Image (tube, rainbow, N blue to C red; front, top):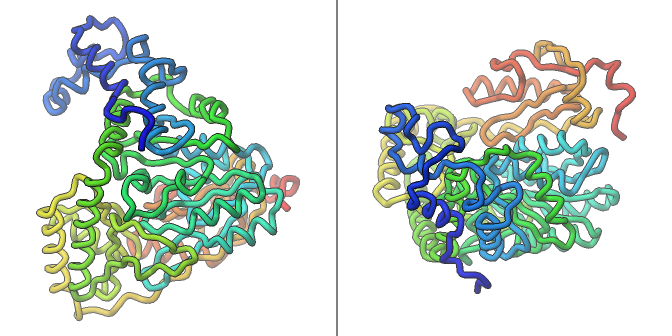
Length: 496
């Protein structure tokens, strides 16, 4: 199955050799193996993390110019994922996504993207100077979430924009739903342009046949993965996988270097090295247990009055083609409370912290680290909450329609860098936004820099705020004001 010995962890082994040598450090960081660290922090952390918190030298290799153990660790990752090249990211998947985008588009190039993208994608578009062409994802009004974009939507958008330089899709969504990525790859490649994939929530897909097809398996050209989200690496550690026919790995590496610190964390990189070994060698059986446990929870939630946890029944062959059962989305509309309300009850009363909440749902992310006891604790809490709320209030209103994609007046980078003036959001209708507006998590933009603000958007943001959901992106933390571009500055840089 693999070309290389996936039992190896070259970077982690080198760090262990450094520790075993009892090396005297005259290098940064200044805590010098923890001797100079704050005592209370060190007491909590223990000594070991400090011992492998090192800087660049020959034994442990260089992140920016790998020739030794980091190079070997990345080759093992590429082998595990079936990629031509693999790159570590210690700037999260956001940094990997931005490098991915900038490797395929530049100033004034068109890039086709779904509207329900994470803010890091829009950030990458701003950094590149590209022009986004948005596709509307398929919306599920029963549960109030956006799924993927359909192959038909991708095909139609490419027909209307044959000069596009790349297409980006999400595989899978935050809620675990995938589109027909293999069919989309075929459509995109007919135009001989790369398909790039935000696979933040799919670093585990390669390793069990009960999961949706991964980007690399489907023939995508490059994908960014949040290794830390599902697999056991540490937060902020991710990978970028490359198939090199349409994407130049050397260019990708240049951009990763440009966007990354020159003092990368060896602790984070070692966690990637070991997480890759774990998933490559034991992913099949670990994922079997995880999937079975999550399906058990899904079945039990659907027995609780007022709650609904979707599964494969939402698949319709369009934007919802395959489903990742490790994602547990619990819809609570029939309880008469919002997802945010349920999230806060679980957190404050039961000390159970969910991944996210939106107007209608909460999301639990299943992984190797979950146990039957933990899942039963969640189910017991949900049963108690159901007893308290079901039948005692009004069912929450049907899906609040997401505002239409507004007119794009300026290239996002130009609007973001323009001279901006702060105005009250309620008085901003008709003006050009110089900032983002998004519900977070998962950070899907309602408004991007360079777009015309509409009354529909203003009303939608007010509804989100009134329900207690996070709305962010503006410089004003209360989201009462938004920075807008002066109209006279936008006249000469409008987008066709």
